[in-house]
Length: 271
Image: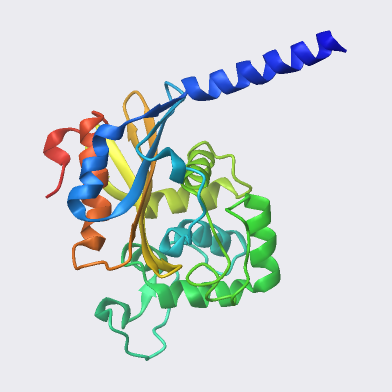
């Protein structure tokens, strides 16, 4: 019995040691959040080194509303169910004028994704329906797979939650074609996710902005493919009183960290 206890203790020690070895905490990047007047975290997974780099490890497993970062998964589900045929599939504007003028027209999947068009994706979700949506969320193991709050609201102000760790895991499985979607659906989504293409790297991303517990939640998630490596990242900001710079901070903080980690060159850092 004593020997069994000793073996279990040793096994747990080795597991914990391995987990700590593949996580690096970089407190030096916290000043980027402080200077922007926001709370939050940056999480990155280096595929080649099999290592996580975290600025705020306490938030790595904290659940947040995914807001528009769910458009990655929503696009996959829409394609897989046949609700939308391809990236050129148009959903007509419903004629309701919204504060985002760029939403007030017909959009196809690729422009709806680029412009983070909420009404397009709400209609997509309604056409998928509650039952199929829940089945696919569960199958894809996306966050907590909670669709409470309405078929066209659950990722905005409903029950769906996702952690930075889960965001990265989902992106890793997307990249490696390990999600339960067809290769065709995955390749279409990978195309519409491209934000930048350079000779040395390609950047695929999605932003998100939602509300949770009286705070604004700002996301910027994606992955960078270089000639030799792939880096998956999830930036999550929180602010009780966001100003006009909150949206830009999602990208500027991320780019500053990616530059500091030599993932992207300094010349690529947008101001």
